[in-house]
Amino acid sequence: MFTIPKVLHKIGQVLLHILFWCGVLLFYTYFFGVDSSDFSYVLSFSLFLMPITIATTYTFIYKLIPEYLITKRYFLFVLYSIYALIISAYLIVISVFYGLVYLSNFKYANMAPISKSLLLVAIAVYLVVIIVSAFKLLKLNLKHTEDAKKLETKILETQLKLKEQELNYLKMQIHPHFLFNTLNTMYGFALKKADETPEMILKLSNLLDYLLYQVDKPFVPLNDELHHINDYVALEKMRFNNTLNINFETKHIPEYVQIAPMLLLPFVENSFKHGSLKNGVLSIDIKLFQKNKILFFEIENTCDSNSESEKGIGLENIKKRLDLIYKGDYSLAVENKDDVFKVKLSLVIS
Image (cartoon, rainbow, N blue to C red; front, side, top):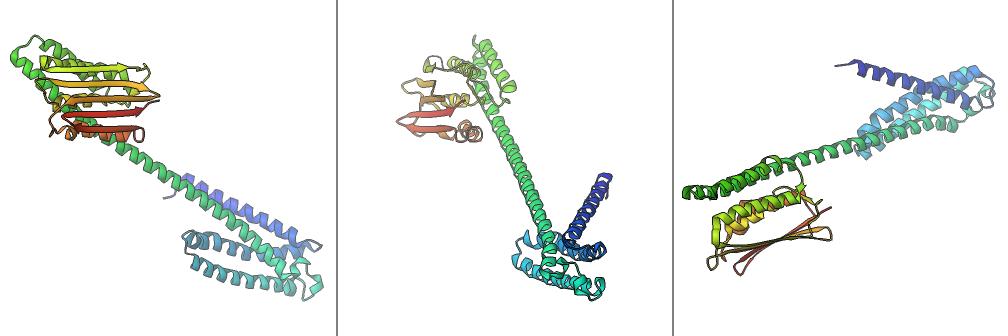
């Protein structure tokens, strides 16, 4: 279906072609008119060459180059090019005889000097064909480059959307998992009608606010993450009472540092969920510090030798999130040895 812009574009192309061939005609009349005063002869000879030049040029730029050269069908391109050159050369020979027979009445001396040379006539025709073909090749190459760039951009956008969807899916898995553990703790306190229950609800409210309004951001201040880790630890302290020995040490943490939300909290949660009491106490040691623009997070907890800590949903999701967000800019080491489970994470921060 033709639209006004398309029609105008086609008209513009036709006018541009007409203007170009008028320019070629002027070139021919100037070229073949050298050392000749018979303008009528030169114009007639140039007009006779125009259909040969136009047909040869369009054969190359609209048939041979797009369908055979660009598609790398080189044998057919060479073969058909030879055919085209033979036919055009034959017509060029006819044009010279046309100048001799019809324009100069078999009088060789009356011919324009340059039109007498078959080689010079062929050079004039093929010069136009070569220039237009080179321009067509350049245009096709630029179009191919532009199309390749658009395709690459589209692929990158698609990959980005897929990563965002995967990241959102991982976040959705983390939230219910975290809430399930916390609500279980509150349920136990509610059954005992413990005085700490209101405080637990307040801290859980703060955590829910973090989950609902902060976790969808790409990055949050590290201090916000630390604040909610402290809330979570406080909740767990109420649950464990005297059976918990936890050391949380932070140092050299600038205010400007930002990380992906809910990145460190699941490691802490994992320690409580899969940690085991040794001599009646669950021991957890957490260290967080920065050195040379690298953030170090280390956490270890007591566990059984056959602990499933490494297989928890939260830890697996964090590994995937690290790959999506910090790919190439982090290292993660997990070790389960001598009844101690250790995680060491380092992140490159700007």
